[in-house]
Length: 314
Image (cartoon, rainbow, N blue to C red; front, side, top):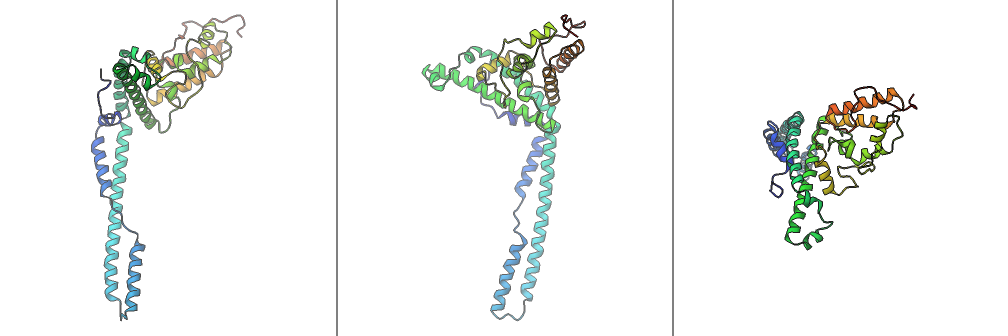
């Protein structure tokens, strides 16, 4: 149990797993510190224009010395500017190498995060009673004495660690995907997302009728919460402690970008239109099998034989 053990941020611990990342990061940061601010050429020109005017006002017969100094200063300015450009180019290259090392190591990062998820979910289960009894406010926890305050801190630590873990999960799936992966909040937390996530519960319960009795029963099973879409990992119809336990009890998983994208696509197609004939029912079960092949867990199993339908099937 490590609930209240002080650790380095998860982000840093993940980066530690990436081959050569720290070496490349140090190079990038050192080059950034070596960059210098080179004033624009106009500043040098203006300074010499003022000296030329002053020389004329004091009766100078020629400006040869001033010209020579300007030539030397201009040459030094050009060299400084060009050299700084070389340093900047090296910094850009080092930054690119650092980013590429991170992108290339997405599978390593996700594997590490899966280990963290397993450990965290074990702790969530160990603290089930504390999570279930979590009060609505810190005041209530304080009122319960030292034990109540300790439990309050334990629950909030678990919540914060889960949020941190899913934040890093999102970072690495988006890195591999090259953009925002659709369905992260509703597909990426539990392999049983179609069974327990409130968004998919709503999609199932609002569908039409189906001639296949097993599909119909599965679609309209209202055992769990159902709610609209959301923009983060936390459903509205659960408290955060409740959701932690729900994830822990429903095959928590940490899929990669392609799995999330494909699972969301299949689930959306699956619940977009209710099957009404044998061909569509067969296609429905085929999609269930595809989800299962991805690692998802669906309570509606694929039949070994053609689905039985009522006399209304056509």
